[in-house]
Image (tube, rainbow, N blue to C red; front, side, top):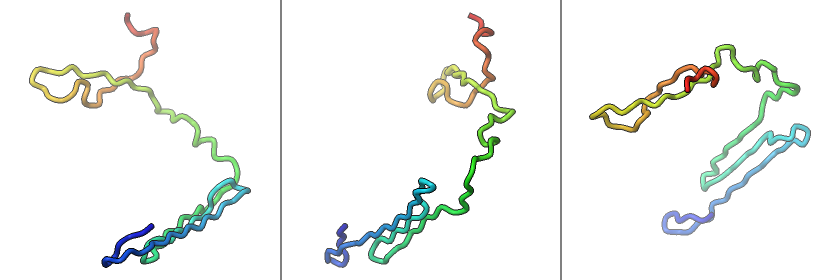
Length: 99
């Protein structure tokens, strides 16, 4: 990459160092050094816990519910779009909906 500095073209070097783990199948460290000033950025994967994740992470919370957004009708003189504003109600099984 070239930049112009003080009227002269200079080449800005960028160096990236990447460390991967075949065993983990993951990028474990990346070091980038860029710019004229040699700005360095380092990203690391740390505190690696091998094994199965806790099953609780994949459970649906007990208070979880599905809600539907019901559009609001625009009143005369009201600006904005129809249905603006968060209006929700609990989901009702299809067999309970009046036709």
